[in-house]
Length: 171
Image 1 (cartoon, rainbow, N blue to C red):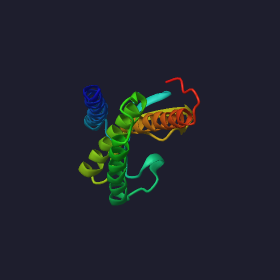
Image 2 (cartoon, helix red, strand yellow):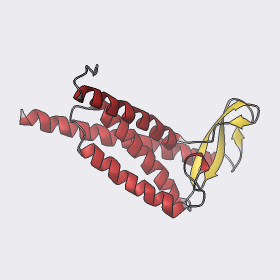
Image 3 (cartoon, helix red, strand yellow):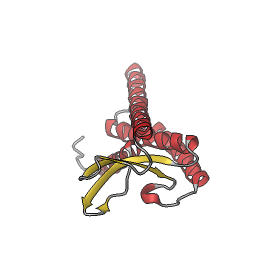
Image 4 (cartoon, helix red, strand yellow):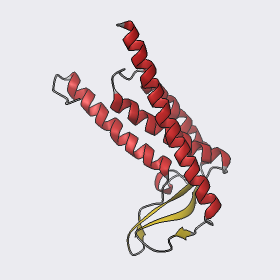
């Protein structure tokens, strides 16, 4: 059976990197399009529930820690190391864990690329207006991947703990 495990590890590793690379590519392509087609602060369409609005965010999620590029870059690099270490100890048969970590890795790399190339700022553009002038903080593809990946990772950990305690996990 060692051949099956090696093949499974190779396939899982390829999936992990493919997911991360896909997220980075879509994130960087979408941000590049926004930077080249919309002026800073410009929205497309100008009104509506969902808009593309060009924003440069010097902070983290929700604009926290604004103008702390070094700190945020350092946290991102430490996060990348933690993701890679966590991935290394992930079960060979965990598609959910592989998917989740691939999304988080891709999102972290996508935003780190922006921080390095644009003086600590990240291009955000997905603008959801809930009512009147109240809207969710503008975000990007990398942010979405990190959020979805984190939720999937929490589900994976919950299912793994449930399975470890002898409960049926349904996976």
